[in-house]
Image (cartoon, rainbow, N blue to C red; front, side, top):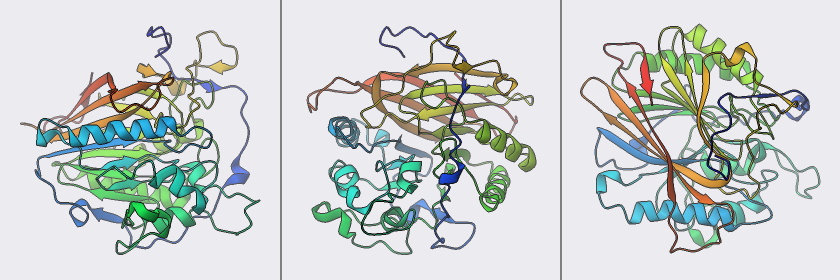
Amino acid sequence: MQATDIQIRTKPVFKKVFPDENHKFQPLPAPCGNWPYSLDIKQVLELPDDNKLVFHMVGDTGSVREPTFQHLVSAQMVKQITAAPDPADKPLFLYHLGDLVYKYGEAEEYYRQFFEPYKNYPNPVFAIPGNHDSDINPLNPKPYKSLDAFTSVFCGEEPHEIELAAETHRRSMIQPNVYWTLQTPVATIIGMYTNVPKYGVVTPEQRDWLISQLQSARKDIEKAVVLCLHHAPYSADVNHGSSRYLVDLLEGVFSEARAKPDIVFSGHVHNYQRFSKKYPDGKVVPFIVSGGGGYDELHPIAEPGNPGYDEDSPLFDNVALEKYCDHRHGFLKIAIAKSGTGLTINGEYYSLPHSMLKDGSLSAKLTDAFEVEVNKINHPGNSAH
């Protein structure tokens, strides 16, 4: 929320004037795994409980000018892991929502912006690429292709030593593609890739893949369906606003697949926002933005009445901004657990003031908490509050 902690906006916005950046689209690298690009989490880590999954989630952790905030956010996530009073509440991994490295996805920036700030993070890190991870610096004296560095760190058939990691000794991840699905006992986590342009671009092949993943996930009543993408479909901030392209794309996909996720996460916007969208069938889908992971510039929420923004679009019907935090960095802790008739997704957003200096004695503040009941057996809808 604003520094006054008073909620001043309840709807997302579209910017009335915005650049056309479709020329920035970059071709996708070849996958290193087979279709449908699925990874079983048990290939990476041992789960203490097949009925509950706890993990961190955050985006936009890279930083060019001021590294303090990314170090602070990382340190607070490490503290939650190492100091968890209950082992069942200990996060098992980080799911990164993109933009690990600014401003371009250059290999030489990965140590300073990712490996070094996360050298003490003891758990695996999964990721989807952000627009900055995917962009190319035309002035780099060593030509490279989009996502060369990202795929060397996160995609591969077997884990291996990464030269970019230096003395941190973090090994590569084994994700099968830059868009991929993480299978767990309690959730199917679908990770999209939305490319470089400001409001996202999705290839027809990936759109078809997303439809197939939603249709497949719909059949498994034992799992929640989580959709992750870097660009935010809905936002009320002054820098980006909502993506009309992604709202249209996702609604078309949900309609064609005859299936919707139980929750949607994104980054790209440098703040925290929690939206809810109620569909005609009664299902309520939260759309969560968590992009305050460390980049020093945070994005404020547009004040009501600002003539540069439009909140009256029919695309915003039944969409409500429930909570936001636009003046603090922060991260999510997500817990997905089986309940009597289905599953429950619990989310907690922890924040740290933008002005706070790096100090290990300081603790993150619980700023928002939400719960999503996923009852796939008896009712097609769910509830979020």
